[in-house]
Length: 80
Image 1 (tube, rainbow, N blue to C red):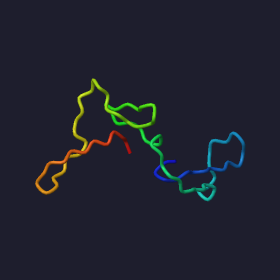
Image 2 (cartoon, rainbow, N blue to C red):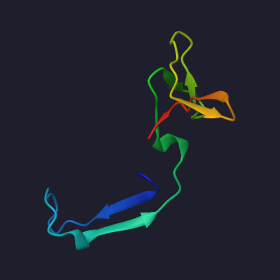
Image 3 (cartoon, helix red, strand yellow):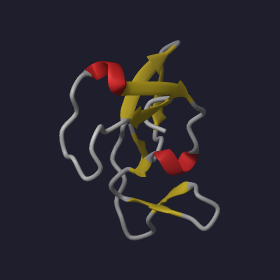
Image 4 (cartoon, one colour):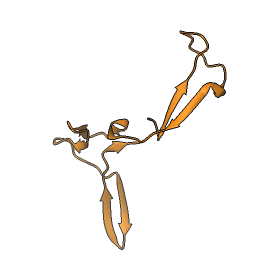
């Protein structure tokens, strides 16, 4: 599942590395799972699939936003 879609390609000849035209590509919607995303640098994947900060890594801010004059820092731990 990549960005909510699965792609299926049909080859005319077994072992062929080329695709004749785009009409042979079929897509299907799918739900993304945590395992479909990589962990950000400084994060590691836990046994239950969640990206957690590494203990020895100094985290930097992924996103700093101002919400009602309050600085809000968001760290997601995942790479899109």
